[in-house]
Length: 326
Image (cartoon, rainbow, N blue to C red; front, side):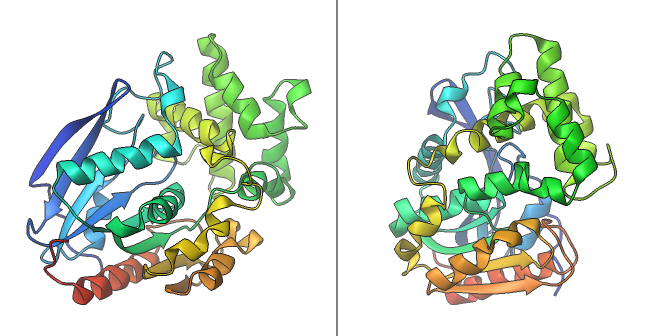
């Protein structure tokens, strides 16, 4: 089964979530359908129309939002004077609850990709009564071990790109946590320092996809590039704001809290996050989960086979409670 046809929102708005932040949201599909919320990756990527096509528009009331600091939400993380201290996992989870109440939704399916899977898992663990199912892809749990893999461990696979990645840091910052070091550069009052750091960070992200240098279109937009790099390093450099005990992962530790929530994990066999076995460990620690592995695919929700697997999952859960308003 392929993706559903492109659709447009029938409603949208800006929700005041406090701290000077306004979050963009939109709803499409069936106003009386099963509620589902889409959590984008990054942190900082924002939602795209592609996500709407992963749900049957006749069966689902599909809610998309741009999380704090990105997309159409305001203020953007790309602006130097944006206060990042009020952009944490707890803040974004609180925003989800405000949006759910604003839209009059009792329970919803939570769909997430990459960072969105981290956010979705933690949201379900802390608010299990409002999550009917989880559908996650490019699965991550936000542990410090995963950050270390993405910012240092992959250097053995991409040594030339890694050398450039470290060379952009001050000499005294190259042996510690690269994400935290880059975040300090991205908080510099000097705009040239910030610009160089954002470029170097996204060059490393591009290399580890892997993709040719400067080939990722969104990273060639200087505003997006700055906001994305600042957001990612803000979270990566601060334990994803999960608190103590996140070396191996708070989300994985608390997987037992998901026991009453069905879920589907769609993972590319070539996703570099698999090197730590996180998705398999999560699957085995979560009795209600199903793991679908798509061969010869990396960390890409839009790759051939991944979209179809995601549609199959949302279709299954639509049948499970088709037409429910809760």
